[in-house]
Image (cartoon, rainbow, N blue to C red; front, side):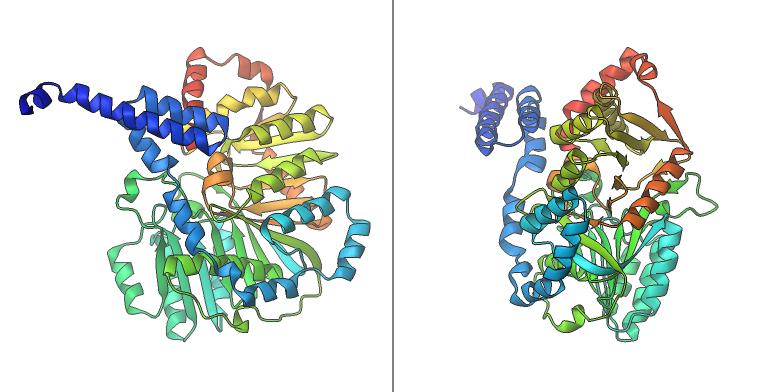
Length: 485
């Protein structure tokens, strides 16, 4: 028997592999997931022995998702439900808003309220911030003024120059008695043992989100926390694309220019950011925060800028951000301007953009000229021909790398946040966007987009169709992996 196993070990291994692969295929078919994603998994499982099983184990399993659903239950807390009901837009204002707002605005508000219990808040002040250096200048000033608590949640947190400045400031505020809660993604972040020792010796509460054994080799592990939010004393909130790393700050010595967009919010929308932070905090800390009113203070804001905070992830019943983007595109009447560093869309978004453009809407897409990911860039390129066929205008940002994740529609609606236009942001990662229903801010976002086009080149259909065949081959290969990127 032993001799038989020794002589035929490879055949036995292959047979076991395909038995497990076929079982996985059956499991995938019963899940009724997106056909493209289903086909990708089936191809990988059947064409790549052993490697396919590893890919499926890392990316296709949902045991971690089920674990999240079972444990992330802060929103069931009666206090948070009560707070949501108190900040939700007043009936008399909603009636006035519905009478004056565009129909698609009202319907989008209703969509998110049903999908994510995300209240439409009215009394807010919003500042659009360009680039990391400007964001951190304002953020540091706000943290210095903190009196009660600072809550931070980041996908990337590194203790390089900008990260050390932030962490040193937090250590200083902790000594003053300010409560610091810090959550960072274990795959995206890198903190030295020296800095972790300082954090451990302080009163700062810090936790890695869903730790993995080998972060360097699991950059695409499922269910990463891709959010970048800060809440200061429950009064000031930050959300957007800027992580904590020197890469995001345009220091004079940096070789590459980094173009990004972030938001600073004061008002009732901060309560929604706080709620989302606490939801994740109870999960990563494995203990429930004792909630009190100090997390949701009453600070009058006279300016009326309606905002909804849309959060999505494995713990939400619906793909809230994707649905909001989809609905905004298909109901647009004049223009849709999209900026994203990674454009690997699902069929719904492609169809929405095509339908809008063919119906006369000015649809424009701004993406990086050179991506920070070879695979992502080629996968993005594989989708562009479909856009050209619908007369969608495509621009490549040439000044540096554009990492902003924004969309502005018809001078009435803007979304800025952490979500890319890709499968991972729509279906797998934890993301958060601010949806702003305000003409002034929409026009400001529109002008920012048009200014960015000055540092971009317009790609024509003729130029694109003449690209080398080897490029098309690379694109076709990378597109196979699109649902996993």
